[in-house]
Length: 399
Image (cartoon, rainbow, N blue to C red):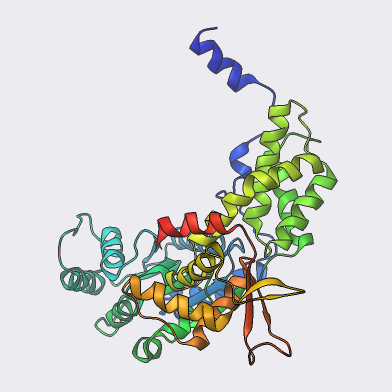
């Protein structure tokens, strides 16, 4: 069989998928189930821009897979459509910035300028780009809605946010509104007083999806992305239950369904059952762990790395009959300070360290519990909840 025939055979073969792209977590449907309240809150905050009034800065928090990015981008997309349909004179410009890529004040300003100007100012100083943005806003009197997705990953976040806020002090018409998106609810508390006082922000939290909500989300995708009668009710329920258990992550549920479909095609059964979902769980588990760890802020990554390093080298604090080998939070903090100094960063206080342990527990990466009677003072007992080698492999690359 020649190569062309092989291609024809591949594209014409039977499949459970009607349109695989519509199952992907990257596809954003027009209807976002169970996010109506959040959509209304965002619209209430941003609608004044359509009336020529500066919207308030908005910060959106929620765990990975709770629909933060999809929701804000869909709302802004519809807002621009309304502006065009209504022929509104006040011009609105939206700028989406992924702070995993644009992770400094300079890169953020450069990305905004790229959207405002026909020419690139790459290579110019941050202060020059800042002045050009101010002049352009004065000239165009435009409202710029800047989405800073994963805002906590900006290395000099205080300076970046302060600069964007300060622009509004230098212009009389038009404005820059910041829409910060983060899975780290503690981020706002780490900003300095000068930055926080100028923000005047509203906050919105996206709660995790429960199993029933995840089932409805999957059903929506099944109806548009799979062939009829290919996905069993049991498979939907199992995928939803597993994703709900993993912090209510819709991306987990969709990846499970997509992987299960690939397994069904490979086996040529063309039916997704609980068996395919169980197999898919094994396939996507490491991918999900890698994705989750890679989205953590650097400080929290170093906390996790410190615990994993201690576990890997068998440096446990004690052995408790019920809990097995555990690490005391005080010992983990000492290791954390050692690791972070090697990276030339400043350690956080013990209070913040314990907040980060709690955050990692929420994500299912650590298991923590407060010590009972007979254990050194009142301490937190720590265990790894996932494979230590996988954690270290990801973090050694990322840090």
